[in-house]
Image (cartoon, rainbow, N blue to C red):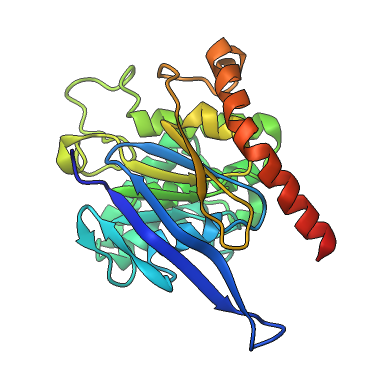
Length: 294
């Protein structure tokens, strides 16, 4: 068995209550989750069940109360340098143009300005924004800002992509376009890339990722079960909080490449949706009741 790209083992996260320092709140308890090299894994669960908490642990932004994190077999210490993080909220710097936003991480890593500009321009073209590099975030639509954020993340050529409900604020048409865009980039767009092309799937430096694979490992957080099934190789279901933990795991055996709109009509998609919803339904209702009682 190959070494997972990301492995969370026995993760628990307990926080001090903001309202009562004497109280403790356990967001997630004893969670074990792996993402294989080149695998696309989605995590679904009720609101407030700790999905983003697990993503922050995997990114090295949050130290767990107990448990371990390994990245390609090595213990994670500090920030996960092999991961790129695409946040749910706006992450673009409003005083920088789209081009300068994409350049920022490249320059921070030590690339000369000319090379950072060349790579940033290439990534903006790849996400369909070749003519918009001089626009500021407030001059871009919601979908265009998400495309810029996607280019900003992928330009750094991370081995692991962490995505926290990145398209939840978009309208359904733009959302599906972005979902298909991510899948196309993740798969490397082999249908259009020439064999001699140096373009790498989800990263522009090396033609292959760790272990000789072109695809990157993706950990995707979403509330949308349809989105999770349409995009993923595997879907992990979390229970309602507190002390959330995995209660189901489903292999998504739909053929690739996929169109996220068309795949929803396939009988197997409907079967998978029903099977996962049977596990998730009661947890969603439990989470809803908790919100009403709060």
